[in-house]
Image (cartoon, rainbow over all chains, first blue to last red; front, side, top):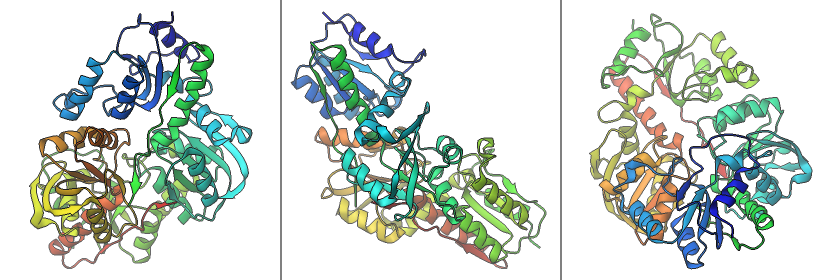
Length: 263
Length: 263
């Protein structure tokens, strides 16, 4: 038999040593035998119901179930939507492991490896840093790159700062909530980038920096692809890792539908 | 003569008592005579150049000049785009006052008053809270409300979670970076809202909450209009306040172009 403890040890093994406050067994017992694994970027209500219906008894989720980087906030303890979800979690014969920090601490970052594989950009990757990757791609316009990324990741739209016709060669890639100025601004400069593609980040930081750079006559652009879209491929990649390690356990990856539409 | 000190005292006067670490004279001297005022949501390179060209010697800006909630980060001290902007600030005969926290601490929040005026929704406003306002509008679909907000605020797109045809009556409105779960989730519940309209916030918080609520069969929706778009009307409203208080000083409001486009 394979216990949840065994799965967690295997998940954590490749990560740089680190004590995570988020990557915990949100629900369940480490000694339970794993009969099926569901992997998702986020434990949405839909993912939870699907996992229950296919009788997978372990969910591995990148983001927590209760809409905060912490896995639970007392502030929402009276909220009926949170309570209904919590009740379903409590009632179901299910175990939930949050796998966030450790996967980001693989070398290279497991979420980034999955994203680059999904984009089929392995051959263009120059350097993996702890919070970003840099790539040199054949020259393409911002629009061409945006359309390629949308197609590969299955996303309906991206938000762009900059000239859509600008030619790009050197790209910085940052997944999740790493689109803020403290990571993006030094990366642009240190790596002499034309374009940064990031998940999300505060709008008055990197986007305004790129706007100013353009006003100063610099050729820079920024594409925000969305947090979920930037990290889902990493969790899809985790499915392949788990299947290789535990071939006798069925592993399912559930992709969310696009979160936003534009009007 | 009217000194910068006099202007700052007037700006701060209506705010609840509070010591702000951000609302400082970023550049300049309090005893300088004010010859012209430029007001902007963000001191972009473009705003800075325009203020210099029209010889306004005081800029009042809501967000800081260097892409962080703090007004300056040592991390960007080697960045040539930041340095070029800093050089222009140093060389110009210009004074810069950051006006953020104090304006939010007007009663009601000055930024919110400006936003509601711009939307012409004064008559629908039920309650001003310290971080939000609640409104009861005549029933309209999410799409109709989104189109109205886009038209009134002059924004090219909004991001939406939820059914575009859902009818909305009770709306919560939050400006700036107040779209996070800690503010939006209790507001939805306590005020029994159909729709929240917010500037920006982390994508895995309020947007995922609304997604789950909908999956549970609740009628909820979220419209993110962008940080700048949600706070610019407040700074435009400040122009009217300043003109009433200091009729002898020319006051200019400079609106930024839309930050993002979608591809």
